[in-house]
Image (cartoon, rainbow over all chains, first blue to last red; front, top):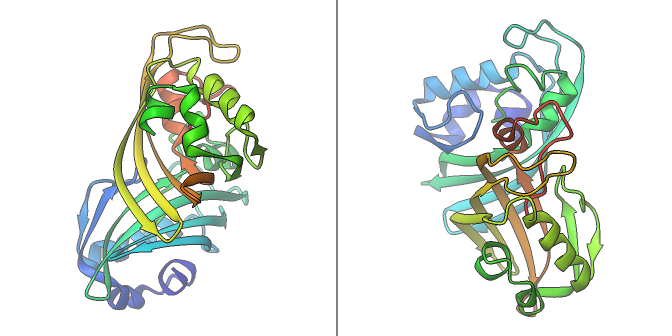
Length: 136
Length: 136
């Protein structure tokens, strides 16, 4: 979370993310249901952080069992880049989510995730529009 | 989940829910941050199921560690009762959420939860209004 999502370190993806990464369920995420290569994951990382270069996750809780870890988090960011048709607004948001990560051989093979997208939509002023961005 | 939330069995609350139940974090839930007595929990159960008497949760995944269990679920229901100012619409919805439950002495002492409320709001046609209902 720190290297890849908080610092946006694209090269770190290869250390933490498996060669095939499956987004089992992530409602509203543009890649919901997809299986990504490392290159695809890097594209997702760059696209997701583009509108919010200061994107930051704080983890409030972890629940681990065998090769799966659930994490509860708060994501904060400022929309200083374009978000689809929306020009930069400078609006800040904070949103909560919970993710289940799947591990194999020390790397993450995918996730299942729920994000309180309604909060993001309201804070960015797009509740009636196309909706909020992907999380992670 | 089956007895309390799917069947709406108010008497079952005493078997599964501790005398004090804390909603640590549940964005958009009317009881977010509250600590409930058993009577308060029962009120919450009745109020939450009122608009959706057929409310049903299907659990897709569990991650357990010590006295905490994360569950990923899909909640489905039909709005056949009034929902705040909204009259019964007969609209059906399906929404995903992830909950972390806290256990002590065989009963649940509270939860932390994220629900994809934007999906509910859109499916019930209230995305621009007061928002969706509580989950559980």
